[in-house]
Image 1 (cartoon, helix red, strand yellow):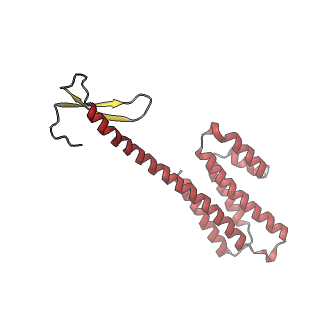
Image 2: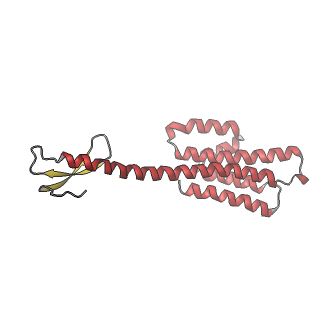
Length: 187
């Protein structure tokens, strides 16, 4: 802010109680209380907008990354279904392979959700869901992993490798998984 005739002032720092927001205000030697309240009222919204814009940008980036994960899960499972070569396998084997692909895709996204949420909020639900949906050995491997999303991503890569399909198509699916790795790196 530019003032036409600012009074003699001293800059001091004010932290609002129970909030991380800080303001720089002007101390006016001419006032009885020592604070130019007009300046406080004019500068406080500017500081809040700055904090809000920064927080919004971070939130929006996270929202876009999460949306990308969700979109790519559908894309990955769609490609697995479309590229699957059923000529050499039974319908039962096809069903099992594609179900495994779907569950491993779900396990990765669920592990990412757990990775990004507080432990007290989600840990027990996470474990229960893994034990309900995955084979016990796979669920335990993910739960005990040092980095759960990486372990789930490994399981997903193994599920893709075991699908009967042309290697070029398999490479396309692995390229789609790379997007998960990129989002994992930005979390």
